[in-house]
Image 1 (cartoon, rainbow, N blue to C red):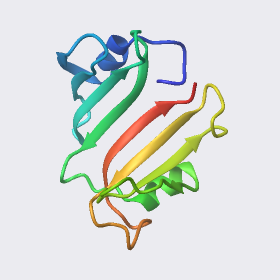
Image 2: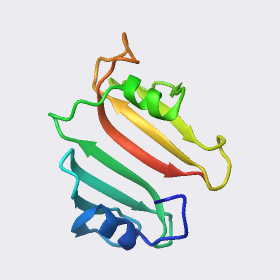
Image 3: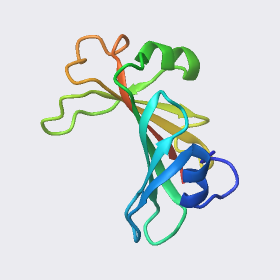
Length: 132
């Protein structure tokens, strides 16, 4: 959706579900996704435009998605550097060639404390980000 023809943040939000709040300006749109595996979607704007910069999908507590399932579908991942005091690991998948215009990245945030078994870690949040 993000790597295809240009869409506005409103069009992306509409494809995901019901708009809950448009905070305006450069702030994100909050969406209640149609897909029951997600509690919320947040569609962020590219600065100063109505084009989407990225989409964050928050999984429900009962959604059982593991890093290994993403790896089976999207290939190998890169473990992102740990940010100061970050408790949850983040892994990144590239759809297409990394950093190639038109490709998309998927960043999966795992549950806090999943550092010992990244591949078996449970996903709590997915970020879909087009590469510009």
